[in-house]
Length: 338
Ligand code: KG4
Ligand code: ZN
Image (cartoon, rainbow, N blue to C red):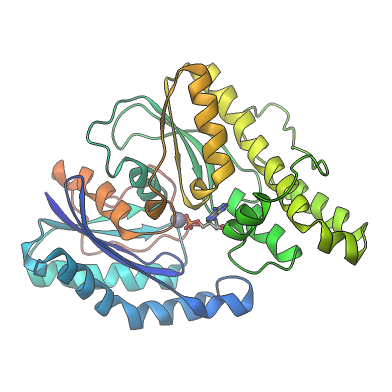
């Protein structure tokens, strides 16, 4: 099955064509305009998507060597995300779907991240415990079958990507912060200073990152400029260790409680080298299977949306032309419900 995917939920305009497990094209245009503001400006994101959407989709089709009417179906993110940004992709796909007379399906962005991990896997076995870690989400999801999601834990406040981005902002490292902290931390000492891991009563699988952010701020206020400069890599390494320790603690607890044999990691933060290593080590130690996405499919991209959409399209599901965008869409509510 050949599916054209479109993703415009935040600050990446992306279009991709996949043929079963093969990615024929995956074009991503990242919006540079937000860097100067230290975060995504919704209005600017919508306007940048409007400019980029047609050329990006054309490029994806050209690279795949296909015309729009040669695909079997279309898939598009309809939430969660920025409403103005989502509407650009959704409306475009509706129009194209009508023009080429092919069905389209609305996909949940988080579901897309999950399928980004499974994108190039020929054979997927369930159950899988998914650790979903992105700029907007931190969730432990138990998947017993395709398209079936049981959320067993999530963040109470900030998402893990936000912890990286806000931490980097405090350290004067720019946006997005995750990749910069990852790089600097590799040269630093993770034991340089200790940041706390939140303990949540009666919520063994939930996360909380707001306290860690405050701890970093308090720490930075207590040291002088020189220490901050000389030990920047050490501070990054210590902060990253605390972020990753919290993820590991809850994931391992969930593995033991639900007796799963497979762990997968998904979302932008799945690109983090320490997280990948720690999860791989833990799985090797416990004899578990570990699925990690190729780096190109960790952060936002349309190939992952196409792959998730394909699972619905294969089952004959399609979305109505009245489908709306949902900024707070929950995992498990899909495109054919309004
Ligand atoms: O999944 P994504 O592209 O967008 C959302 O759906 O939110 O994730 C973006 C997040 C940002 O917070 C970014 O800082 C983080 O992923 N990120 C990383 C790394 N690469 C991207 N965080 C830690 N280490 C990385 N290498
Ligand atoms: Zn994302």
